[in-house]
Every structure is written in C-alpha cells, then in structure tokens.
Amino acid sequence: MDPSMGMGLVALMGAAATVAGCSEDLESDIGSQSNPNSQVQLAAQVGYPHRVFNKAISGEPPSNAMYCAVGAGVAMMLMSESTIAASPLLAIAVGAFVSALLNGVFSTTSYLGRSASQTRFNQYVYLDVLRNHVFGIMGHAYITAFCIVGLSYIMWAVLPVTHPFPFPVIALIWGLAVGAIGSSTGDVHYCAEREFQDFKFGAGVNASDSGDITRFAEAGLRSSMDNAWFCSKFGGPVTGVAFGLVVFLDNWRSTAFEGWTAVVVGLVIVSLLIIYNRRLELYARKTYGPYPEYAGEIEA
Amino acid sequence: MSDISVVGMLAENWMMIIGIIIGGLCISVGVHFVPVGGAPAAMAQATGIGTGTVQLATGSGLTGLLAAGFMYKALAAGGIGLSEIVLICATGAVGAMIMICVTMLVGNWVYIYGVGTPPASAKVDYDPITGNSQAPYVAPGTVGQGMPTVCFVSGTMGGLLGGLGGSLIYCMLMGVNGDPAISSIFAIGIFVVNAVLPSYNIQGTIEGFHDPKFKRVPKAIVACFVASLLCGIIAVLIPGIGGV
Image (cartoon, rainbow over all chains, first blue to last red; front, side, top):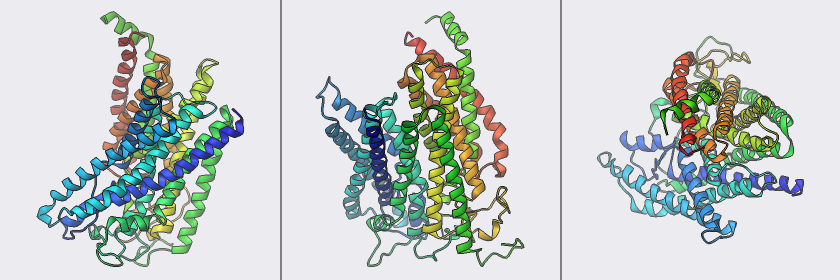
C-alpha cells in the first residue's frame, strides 16, 4: 500500500474519532450518565424533583467499552466466511445498530428503576420523558459505536501494518478510551455549568449547593434535550477534538515513524502539550484573577 | 495436567512472572500519580480530572497497550530481545502519556473557557513546579478545580508508568503464549486488577505526587505485588492447560 494511503487512513480514523467523541459526550449528557448523575440523583432527595433523564448504567468507560465490543463482535461474526460474509460497511452498521439497541435497553431499565426508587421524594416516572429521550440516546450511541467500530476495523484489517489484537478487543479499548475522555472533558461542561446555570458564572459548584440543579428552561421545564443542545456548543465538540487528537497523534507517530523515532516524536508531542497547558494556566490566572472572597495572606 | 508439569511450567517461566510483577507495580504506582477528582471534579468542586481513578488510568494505559501491540508486531520478525522489549515499553508509555496529556489539556479548556475558573490546587499553597500561589484561585466552597501544572506533570508521569507497566505485561505474556489475542485480554485483566487495588488508597480523589495521600503508595505496592504474583502464576499456567 502507498504510504500516503496509510496517512490518509490515519486521518480518516482521526475524523471518525472526532465524531465519536462528540456523540459519546452528547449521549451521556442526554442521559445524565456518569458524573452528572450524582447531582440528578441527589436533586429529588434534597427537594428538587425534575424532568431530567436519569440513567446510571455505569461509568462511561465500561459502558462504552461494552457497546463497542458488542458492535465489533457482531460485525466480525457477520463478516466471517462461515456466516454470510457481509461487506465490512454493512457489518459495521448492523453491529452499531445492535449496540444501540443494547444501550436502549439499559437506558430504559435504568431510568425506570432510578425514578421509581425515588417515589418517596415525589420524583415521578415520566413516560413522555422516557419516550422522547431514549431514541435520542440510542441515535447518539449508534453514531459512537459506528465510528469506533469503523476505526477499529481500519486498524485491524486495512492499515499497511494491521494491528495484532482481535477486532473486538481493539474496539473495547477505544470504547474505554472514549468513555474516559468524555467523562473527563465534556461532562464538566454539563455538570459544572449547565446543571447549575442558575448560579453565577466563573466558579465551581459550592458544596452547599449540591443537588440544587437548574430545573427550568428558557421556556417551561428543562429537559435533557435542552442540555444536549447547550453542550453541543462546546462540551461535545471539545470531547471530539480530544478523542480525535488521541487517535490521530498516536497512530500518526506509529505510522509515519519507526522505532525510537516514533518514541521521540511522541515525547516531543507530550512536551509541547505540557508547555501549552502552562501558557493556558497563566492566561486563566491573568484573565480571571484571584477570587474576591479570598481573605488569606498569600500574595496573588 | 500433573503437578510436575505445573512446577515445570512455573520454573521455566519465572522470568515472565517477575516481569508481570514489575509491570503490575508500575501500574500501581502510576495510578497514584494521576490527578483524579471523580464527580466533585466534574462539578469543578475538586482539583483533578473529573472521572474515576480506575477508568482514566485504564483508558490511558490501554491506549498505550494498543501502541505497544503494534510495535511488538513490527519488531517480531527480527526476534524479541531485551532491547526490543525496552522499545515496546517506551512506545506504550508514550502512547499512554499522549492520551492522558490530551485529556488533561482539553479538560482544562472546559474548566477555563466553559466554566470560567483558573486551575488551582487546594492541597498546596504554592505549585511545587511553577511556584504560583494556589489558595487565592480556589473558588469558595470548593477544594480546587482544573489541572494546574503540578497536576498536569504528575498525570503525565502516571500515564508513563501505566503505559510502561501494561506494555511490559503484554511482552511477558507474549513470551509465554505467543498469542496476541490471549496476551491482550490477559494484559487488560492484570492492568485492571492493579488499577483497582490502589483506588482503595486514593478513596475517590488525589491530586498527584504532591497530595498527602501519595504517601500511602507502599501499601498499594504490597497489595499489588501479591495480586500480580497470583495473576502471573495463572497467566503462565493457563496456556499449559491449553496444551501449549
């Protein structure tokens, strides 16, 4: 294979990863999975019943690892000569569909179980919330699974030097990584900002305000679709950028360079990221300054 | 399988078991370096990355494992010796470092541009690396937010150790059974074991090597030594049961 073709494939993987990261974060935002779930769950218990979708299937990394591994497993089975020898594109699409169905089952049981267990706090099971949100969650889950199973397939079968791990294991690892990144980056935008939009911008959530989530929208009651709309402006796209960068940079240095050169290139990338983070930190300190409430002796 | 063959297999592969233990200990120590704050960090209520210890350490370490597997295959044709193992481990370590650095950097984007907070640690008055004061930048009612430089560097070191450990375990397993499928799945399993045990030390949040909780590392080393030894013995014996 032409080396430029290999680089093109790596770029394609990066693009797929960017889309996957974005949709993964928005899927978790609609369902309030992972970190934000602690506040959604707490809200009713401290007197704020709401109409936000509440699914705590597990942390995002294990659940996405499972969806992607299932999708890759189904795709691999369909592509096998001993079954129907389906084309890779069709097999990946069907595999992603199966993983979206799995997500739908978990989302439904999770919402019903969570909400039903909070009856004593006047938190009702809203069937319209269930109907309106599950398909949005499944749709995003499908996009995530399709992109990750697709990029795993490229690594496993298409790149000039294919990866030795089994197809579902590669998908499992990337699913785990996208969940870890989504949970670490995009979730913060939803959890620290959108969930507490009633509070002043420019600080984290005061511990005494835990559970007091924003329940009213620009018009009417806030739903989780509103949250996904808000997070799609920043939290989702940056999650996509993060995952796309991880997939692209890691595979680019392995494909374009060999041996110790690839290691040195990786170290240069890491050094540049550390320097950029320092500059970012200085920018934030200069722009925002110390908190006015601070009354200590330490000079700012 | 007779008792003699079990002893024979263990005697034949003792070097591999030691390698697995060293890899497990690298992961165990590496997890303590990763600045994680769990759900409080996701609310910008605590310093660190807003996710769980095991999840982030595993996410970065296994990304490194993918890079290491790729490098192992590329080098396998010429035979795998000590210098090749060093290169594979370095590749895995750098892969994990890239993953965790990008995650921390983009996390800081969200804290700074999305939430409007400067990164600050609540465990130290001054950043041990840059010397910047921290307390005035900690939002009221919180214990810090984001990843200041010391946490970022600590997280990078955590990624290095996690990727190194995972890759070393993979190399050792490949030396035992030679099958990438079995080796990768076993490596993931041993990685998770060694990432979960230290999380009892961390109890949800840790800022990195400057956090007082970091002093608990020796306890995790003892626990992970025992766990990795058992994992190593099982990993050596299972291919034997399969007739290899």
